[in-house]
Each structure stands twice: as structure tokens, then as C-alpha cells.
Image 1 (cartoon, one colour):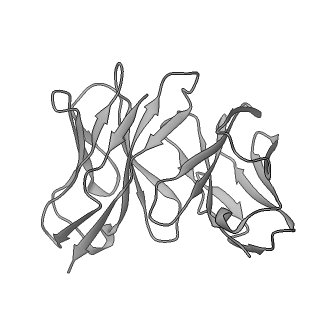
Image 2 (cartoon, rainbow over the protein chains, first blue to last red):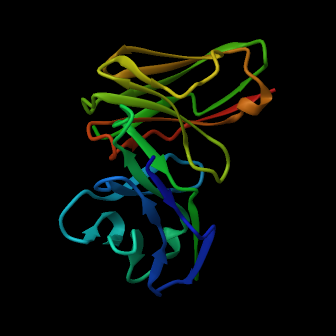
Length: 116
Length: 111
């Protein structure tokens, strides 16, 4: 089965500093990876995806993610954090097996706190 | 219109009540989903509809009954729920299975 792991429950970063939210994956075959963000009392919002191609993927709100096959990682990054980036971030992987091509498996989530 | 709407925003119900959650999308997406989310946890998939047919049921108790009347509308009928069913219920739609558009959710409290 496909899975993703987010090793950090919470990440704190000062406003204006670069941020990284970590994700590692375990898949059979080529990975289809995603990042979502959830603001308090809201649904999830799609940020970006990796399917194939460039290892650096650009997404919404200035976020990007770096796909690293050798390290099986897909870390979310932003050069300069904003207080408004404070939210819960989920890494996700598409399930391509067991007829479950429509399933997406989410990581446990990382709470990002940007400190003014 | 790139929005998924959900009603109601909040719902409080007793264990003997029957209620329904409603979800609507007008993006022409072929798949629609129901998720349950507890606080600070990832969404848990409940049901997937593809082309208006139920394609995935993640062993959800029968007190939750989904319905897809047409390609734009998804309902979740609730009956005889338990307090542990209290959660945020999220609806989503997609054309590409990975890139899902989520509604704001219904905050359900079961007394």
C-alpha cells in the first residue's frame, strides 16, 4: 500500500525565514504526491502535486516542493514565511492499486506556526 | 465556479435523530467524496462516488448512508449516530483523483 509520513507534528519558524515541512513516501511504482493546507475550521486546499518531470514543483501561495527519489522525500518549502501561512499541512499520495485509483492517503499532518 | 459548497455549516443532533448533509459542485467533476475528520487528524475517507455510482465504501457503519442524486450533488444521510461520530465532515470533488477540491465542511455534534 502507498503511504506518506510526516515526521514533525509541529514546525515553528520566524516570519521572513525560509520554511520546510517534511514528507517521506513509500510507494510501489511511480509516486503521485500532493500537498494540501488546512486553515482553522476550513476544508483542505490543494497546494501542489508531483506526477512526473521536474523535481522542483511550484504551487499556490509561493510554496514549492522538492521531489527526491533517492531519499523518497517530498518536502514542502517556501523562501520567506508569512504569519498567514500558519496552518495544518498534509502530504498525500495517490493509491494506484486495489482498484483504489481514486483514493488519496493523507499523512498525519504538520502544524506550521509562523512567529511574528 | 470552482467551489464546493456544503450545508449546513453546523449540525447538532440527538442519537435518535435523522438528518442529512448536503454537498454541491458545479465544476463537472466525475468523482465526489465524503471524509470524516477529527480534530488535528487527517481526513478519513468514507465514500467515493464515480460517475454517480458508489465505487468505494471504506467499511463505514450503516448509520451513514450516502446518496448521489446527480453529478453535482452528494448527500450523506445520518441516523442513530453515536457521540463518537461527532467530527468535521468534508465533501470533495475531483476530475483528477489526486487533486481534490474540498468544501468547508459540516461540524457535526451528536449528543
